Length: 199
Image 1 (cartoon, helix red, strand yellow):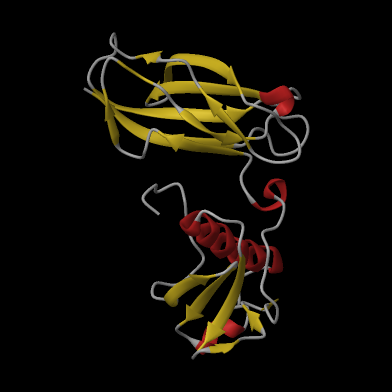
Image 2 (cartoon, helix red, strand yellow):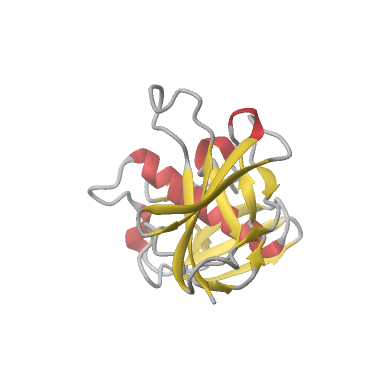
């Protein structure tokens, strides 16, 4: 991933290629060792890794297509210990994706004057909080409202964020779900960040 906050459990070169025909994406693996779940990887992490491939392939083909895994051109019965004998559909977004994701700005994007941020999320009562920070100091903050919440991730977009009064340099844009409990329940807000450069 371009964003250093993101990581992938898949080893470099795990995939030979992929193809899309009809309503099916075929992903060809390169290594038989991917059949079993490696030591140190939990069952939940393995299932998330599989869903990472499903959602990535669906994004690539712009369709909610089923995804099948093959090795040496033949179907493989499991990948990372997760059953894959049949093509897999996407799991519910709220179960396998972060509840907050920034689409724009991109990591490392240069902005000047003002910029608009957007993404998808599922936040209490559709409230999306945002901040611009320089180091640990919050220099801008606000909120916006997503198109919905609860059952899936919904699009959100900020109004124009004025950065014309900020000193040129590197800043962090942060978007987060609303946490009405103040961290007393659950793991606190889901957060995504992007490094931006104000010119």
